[in-house]
Length: 349
Ligand SMILES: *[C@@H]1O[C@H](CO)[C@@H](O)[C@H](O)[C@H]1NC(C)=O
Ligand SMILES: [Ca+2]
Image (cartoon, rainbow, N blue to C red; front, side, top):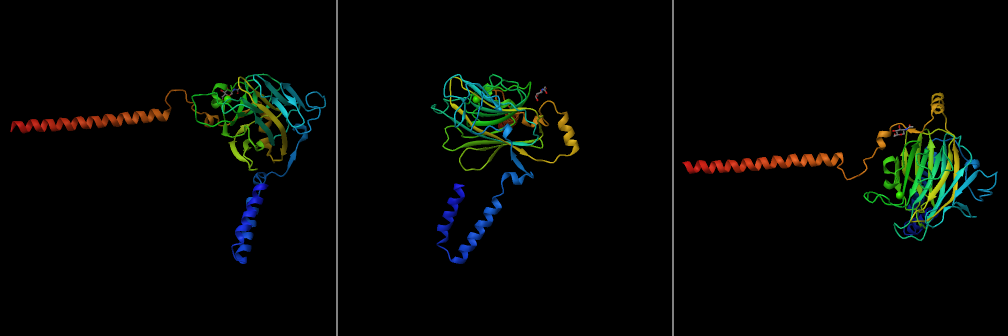
């Protein structure tokens, strides 16, 4: 909200230098533009209504979380509750912590807004490993994927703060990415999940002075990931995946792990909203039959992970330049030969 107010103030001081008529015209223009620009993201998509679903949400005060039978969430590992946040791991080595919803998600179309904070003492690239947000069939498991099991079934969103792959310098960390697990697909930690990633973006969310959020929206088999980490109160698109099919009955969760490097990984809230979307009977039928999560066109996400060998494009150009070089050589040889022949002929006459 701060930004528009500041703009307005700037607009006014600017107006003082102009005649009244143009002032009112500028103000009118400004109002029209604000109204036109204003429509929120949800208005763009034709959802009829939007509701916070408390039973799936993790919000303050975290009453009874982790010990009460009436709580809808479980804690695991080093995770602990304070009045301000759920701390998955403290800024200490070799910790694993998680928080998992107890209630399987029956909503087909939903939005999850995660308010998180990653902070610590470590200097650049001397901190890790990040945190993950889950919507999976499995819950309360230990493992190597940000403190959760590998070969999970469902969605994983990773806020990866440490570059494990030292060969790739193709992205800036922290990097947020999405993966859809089907129970056999592996998350490759050494490559920061590149081989299985469906989309992602850089989000400078560590030791940020601003509040940091991410938003997952799933509707009509389309998953959108948005981030808000630079205090502009605007969502920036991070990934947009269509044809993603996710069964219902999975659990929301958040997990984190530290290794040799560490950070505080905190969840402040996870708010789930129901999106109301109309469905044709055929769509209903398709949803019923789905048992394993999948992406319709997996090919489009298969990336060539740099591993020292030449890519197709590199090979093509190497070949092209070799052929061109060879042609040039042949031409030069022919020219030299012709000149030599001419000189010899001259000597005969
Ligand atoms: C999971 O996905 C991978 C890659 O798309 C595929 O090779 C594998 O067969 C899938 N497994 C299941 C159980 O669907
Ligand atoms: Ca990593």
